[in-house]
Length: 370
Image 1 (cartoon, helix red, strand yellow):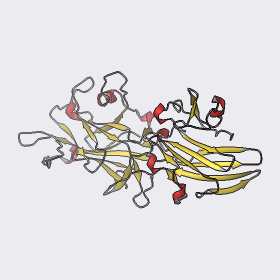
Image 2 (cartoon, one colour; image 1 turned 90 degrees about the vertical axis):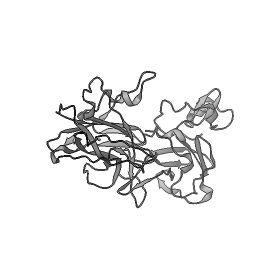
Image 3 (tube, helix red, strand yellow; image 1 turned 120 degrees about the vertical axis):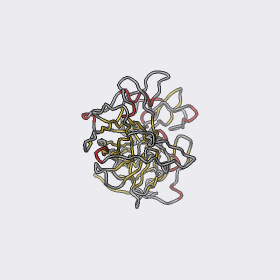
Image 4 (tube, one colour; image 1 turned 90 degrees about the horizontal axis):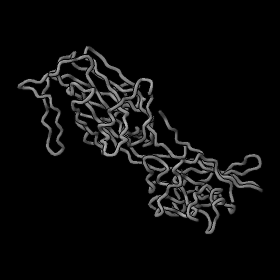
């Protein structure tokens, strides 16, 4: 038996549905032997867990099993491949709904060979691809992407397996407001804990403070945003979000950019549309017209030339204005998908606009291995 890789074991690694379980090792393997090869044992069955498992056989074979649930969001199992090889014979030996299984010779499929003291080291990479959304000023992805370096080390007396994660995981700041109009942008962090609770409401029961930044979020995890007017008590004025967008740096004019709201409405070319959340009078909200809320599913920026993920840092920005409703001016920013939205002409004085930005938000695929 090869020695087990030294890996942190996630607490739910072995909670694999029976229908998805994939046999690990030979029939009749004991629980102790199963654990030795980094697999899970239950009900006299040895099976692969929700992780990436690497095994090195004594006859010089790599066995690499990638679980769909090894990251959050899930990996697209059909997109997993060996990074260094285009040979069709190096494709997965099998793909199930929950796992991709590779088995190949340690001398094949682009494996790199080096000598280290008393060992011969065979090294390869496995990675997943991801879907890219392309906009006029930047590109993003919301899919998990991972890349793993794995090794088999052989000597005359031992076989060892090693996994090293090479996909870097980055970590966000709070409020900036300019001009006579003071506006604040906050990120909500309330939890929906009770049965029957509504996540979009419970999220706004608490907010990140300056000391909480940078804030780390998982790809596709909703980020709940509130923009509010400060130090105004006029119940007749209405806050407008003219444009909200994201950048990879604190500079609101920096590139790449991704639109979130355009004229207060979800950017229509985003596959995961931003959700505009109505603000109602409630505890802590005396003037609902002074507040705007929305949620956006988190993403990472992608290089438009190489389609590789760039900086996992994201900063949100909103250009805001104050509207004064009258008999001829409506301050409603209504959004209709099926019909062209009638543009509302709003007269705004120069000192009634402001740009507000968030602090740094870090996106991660949240590998369960780490």
